[in-house]
Image (cartoon, rainbow over all chains, first blue to last red; front, side, top):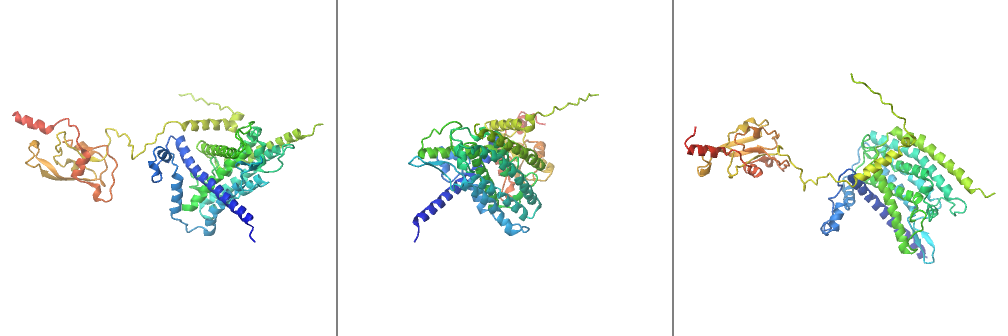
Length: 372
Length: 181
């Protein structure tokens, strides 16, 4: 009657999904802390260093260190968002106002289903990628779903029925559309390169991308221009400085989330950082060799479960460095003006991405022509 | 007349027009800043250095012999622009014979810290150097009554300051030597 095997598999998948959500959300929470700490250090300040759980503060060395690093601050912030009063202003469109944070968070959490983050070595020597769903069109899925995140921002701006959120929503949609093009175009040469005959990878799968960088140069070194365009577009897509047009707290108060408070604001906040985490992971996968050790080198760890753990750790280390890079850029560069953002997107990045694509089309065609 | 020199700006080179080298310079600056010293003062635990002539909360001080300096002349009460000071004058008790020649002392001395503007006129006008604005600046209370500093509180805040003159001791000695005026 019941297919227990099936039920078991479903249960296992649900468990993995929950674990993945937990990991990404934790990383998002701690990137908020990292943002505060790194910005503080860069500005000669100390940053959050007061929050501590009861009793933990009395642990001789570690307690003081954890407190000084503000390790419990994300907990306190989350609790604060939970217990704050949920204010819904009278002038908003209530349905869309409540819907917007969910629409913003869901794409951020959906993209991570197709993210490979390591490989598992079976006893018979085969290796499987560690991921929730091994889609053949992984990168296409990610590009499609992550750009849905803009709807959350547009809905928030529009339903708030107030001028600053509205401006934020408009800017965000314009920005997202402009940089989506450059982003997609910057990824095409990568897949052209990887799908060379003889390399084995023929699709849009993220796992194939990672495996093509095993014992060979990272794609960052092969196609630096594609990586640069992708990185800039990634900054724009995740609404990070210098492209944080939707928020721009200096000219738009808080941008699209001006009218939000309490837990709904918290959801926007987490969604934003989840986008950064996922974006960093994608950049790691596509350009930094994923869980493989170093360019031109084979993985120094054994092909056992220890090796797969180290691989996952190495992948995480790269991702965390990229998150740090995001923060680093934020506290270094000032924001672009809105027209400069549009100008950069349409008149610089898009032609550059097209030229890049054409160049690699020619190059790959020349490399691939059968020997006469 | 000063000669005006119009500087010709050099056209930006290709690398400058991409801004990338400048961004890298900026990144280096912010990164090196991460390891420099911090300027944060952990406030309630660490306090800033208060300069000597700081005008903090007005307090009453005693002389190094532990005697009350104020003679309740009420000059400070008179000069106080926001009328924050109120003095009830009283006599020095007969029992305190080491305070000979001092005729009066405040029976009650109140400074309303809700009115005080920290101008320092009371310190300036005091002929006895009995009232000082010292380095305490943080003051809070739960009620208006708490914000009125009574005599005991004022002496507790003030403590003892070194005295340059010992005015009343000098007067007493002069009289003992028979040359009072």
